[in-house]
View 1 (cartoon, rainbow, N blue to C red):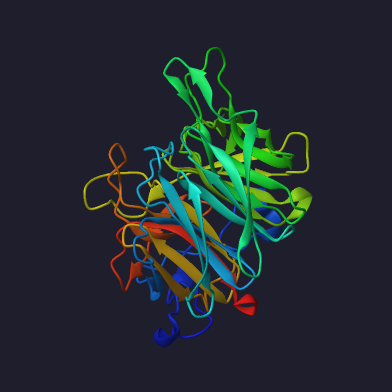
View 2 (tube, rainbow, N blue to C red):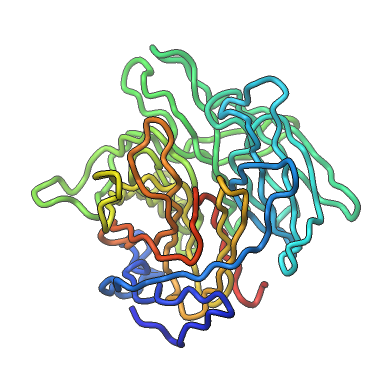
Length: 384
C-alpha cells in the first residue's frame, strides 16, 4: 500500500499507514473490497492532543459525534456491573474543532457503549456491560438535554451454573436507523446447547428497549483465514462481544463485531436477511509482545474511508488525541489494543491496523506513549 502524498507532521499525518495491508476486506464486504498489499515496517503515526480530561473525570472510553460535537464517556471508577453504589459516568461533549467543553451529563453506573443516532438527533448510551445493564438516550437541546432511561426486554442477563451475568456494550446505527448492540459478558454456562445472542437489534417502545437476536455466540461461521488443514467453517465460540461498527453495503450492509477476549472479529453481512451471513477472522500479532506470546485483544475498531481525522482515546491517561488521515488508503481498519488487565494476555498497548484477510494486527509507531488506547472515531474531511 503506498502513500498518495508525503506526510506532513504539522497536520498530524498518519504517515505510512497506507503502506499496510489493513485495507483488504473479506468476501463478506466484497462490494467495498480493495487489493491487498504487503506490510511496511516503517509505518508511523503522528498524534496531536485534542482534549485532556476535565478535572475530576477519569477513564474515557467510547467516542461518538453528533453534529459538530465530539462526545466521550468518562467511566471514572465505576465497575463493569455498575458497582459500588453511587458510581457514575460523565458524558462530555467537545467542540470538534477547538476541543472546548460544550456539553455535560451524568449517568449512574458505567457507560460502556456510546453512539450517536442522527435519525433522532440523540445519543444512545448503554450502562454496566457485565450485569445490571440498561439504556439511556440523551437528546441535546440548546441549553441542556432530555435524558430518558429504558430497561431491556428481555434482559441480557442470564443465569447459568456460575450465577447470573450478561449486559450490553457497544452500539452501531445503520443507515436505515437499525440499532445494533453487543451482548456483553454472555453467559456461557447455560444448560443445554448454549447459543445465546452475540448481538441484538434494539427498538424503543415506551420505557422498554426491546432486544432481538441477530446471531448467536456459537453459530457456525466461515473462517476467513483458516489455519492450514483446519476446517473452513467453525463455531464462533464467543465469550466477549465488545465494540462494533456498521459498514454500508449491499443487503443491509455489514456489522463488524469485535470479540475482545476471543481474539477475533466477526463479520455479519446480509443483515436484511432472515439468516445473515456470518464470517470470523482470527487475529494474530505481527510482532511478539514484549512480555511474551499473545494474540490481540482489541478494544475498538474503526474504518477510515479517506482524508479526515482519526480521534483516539488513551483511557489510562485521560486524553483524546487526533491524527490527520490524509494519504491513508480508504478501507483501512484501525484498532486499539489496551493495556492488559488481570486475566488478559500480555499485549503491549498500541494503536494498530488490521489486515482483514490474514488477521495480522500491526502496531503503529506513534510520537506519544499510549498507556491504554480505547475508543476510536473517524470523521471524514468534509465533515470536520
